[in-house]
Image 1 (cartoon, rainbow, N blue to C red):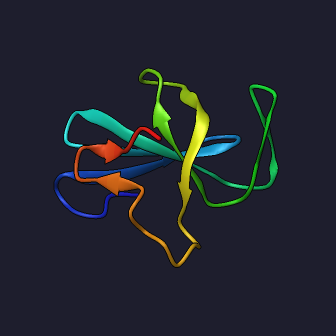
Image 2 (image 1 turned 135 degrees about the vertical axis):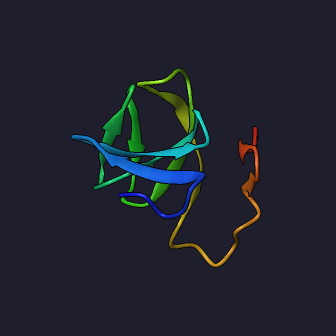
Length: 78
């Protein structure tokens, strides 16, 4: 799904990959589960560990009222 000329979404089995320009901005969990031994909830945002895999720790959630977990460059370190 293409949102505009610089942002697109690519759904996968467990995550939706958010692509900005030619790089991965981050990943969003599609459902509750476990990722690399840690629990995750639907909507959790993870930094990219590489083009095809999210990093281990959750940075925030798209459903939370607090939306200070990201910058235009991607999810922040915590």
